[in-house]
Image (cartoon, rainbow, N blue to C red; front, side, top):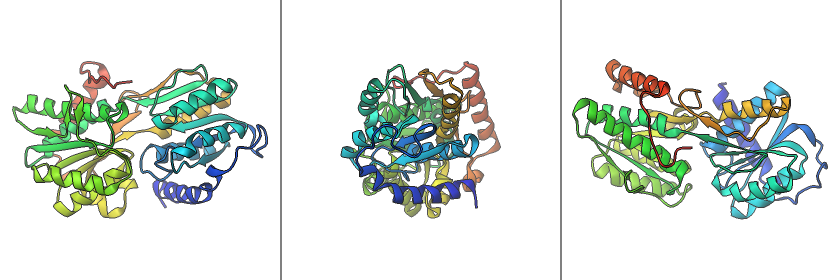
Length: 352
């Protein structure tokens, strides 16, 4: 059994067993059997533990930390907005030395609990909270999305690609900025006119479904893009992106997944349409942070994932590798190295 499959199975069991835990009243500090150092509590946002996005990848990283550092990790699953603050309070009440929260929805609760509990280390994924004991874990996904946009333009047969988001928020639009810039770079290099639908970088406005959970909205929006000629689509919308994958299967186009490797985490029927994925390697960040807490070297300096440190990347092309010519692949590698060297700067108002 692969690590990815094993992680999904463990996550599924965890989601089922912890759903009730997330609604329980918070214990008194020090009341947990795992209280004190050597344990970590994670609080998901409303997307749940198996979101095929950064809740899932954060949990996988903490599972890896269990093996490497011998800690005990537990996830408190938020099923709605009303779970968020109580779950953070419960995580703090466990007495663990590290509390990990995921996403912008948890920013307020994280800051409140961090200020009230200065001896507890906090890490928040995909959001920035400024406090002495909170470490933001953020990713310059525009760098990797730039490569994905260049790739999309390079494999498109129609000369039209597209992107959409779940909401107009910096962690979302950062992907979209990089994607359209990558398409523009391809046009500049090749003298082509590939169009990118769904996002106007100058106006910082575009196509959004309004949530990250309604799969049907993603399917309808993707069908609209396909009707306009798009044959590669980048959904930045969590579970909503599964609707894009479903439309891609039905209409014979490709998608680019985000956060995790969609070829590994999406249902197998979507594998034939996953061109690549823009990865946030949250797992690596979790290992580093847990190690710092265990060694007493934790700081609030943000972890910023880049191409240079491997925190962001694009996934292999898997079953669609034949679409990518050796020349195009070499161009993408050249762009990767130029970004790492600082010779090519991918800019975005949402950059961390």
